[in-house]
Length: 379
Image (cartoon, rainbow, N blue to C red; front, side):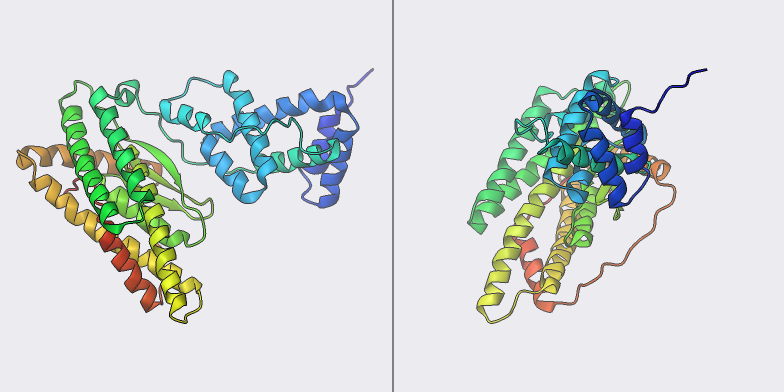
């Protein structure tokens, strides 16, 4: 009677993946480094780990974001390579998934990380992380009809992106204000057009969801800012603090604008915070963490106020606000129902560390100068 012997990869995994000690990792890496014939199986197992992550609700950007936070740049490159290698065997995906594949970190031309032992160590560290990924709420892919942009919609989003990019880049507050105000006007028009178009379609689209990274430091204030942007754009945001992202639920056209506006506001807030902090230091004050935390919290709070005011104005400024309100109410109810299906249990959290009066004052002023508003919202 004969029995098959465990492969080198099996023995390496037994030592390294199911043993959290450094000695187990070294043993596994030594086994792999000594057996070049194990490379193909090792790569195949990596693609299986990636496929398992997709089945547990993860997406490419989620995995890359976590690897970048928990490990190092070589592991990020290895991850991107595994995701690309697994893609031909994957099932058909939607445009948001494909966009994540297109933005994966580019390989640097090196097939390996250092010598064989160093490379094997990095691979096993990555596989350890992939093996322990928790299950996430699955994100529905938007239906083809919902994701096929009309030429007018694509042009509108292109103009919004360009205006926000200029607002982020300029060093003149008045110019940034004018550019942001124009972007806000286009966003409101885009939202109303998409809502009315969907209402008249024979098969209206349904809410979907996306994940947006909310990275430390000051992640609480950043999550509050994202929540304000999402709410003003008929979306709902649920923050996952341990995994450093928020899931935003909404209709596809609104999700795109939430991502655009949130990114732009973060860039502008960071610029304004750096400038305000420099002025504080010039006045003799040392840099403090509480100043930045309070600045961003005030910024998020004030931007939320302005977004809500702009939402009311955008609805009342349409030609037929009475006709628009039922359409928006139906869409908002659909978003709420979808959010509650995905997250039947949520909790609220109190913003911590907001104790610096100067930071709060400067953050409020910066939010007033930004004058970035967004979509109409139901009263």
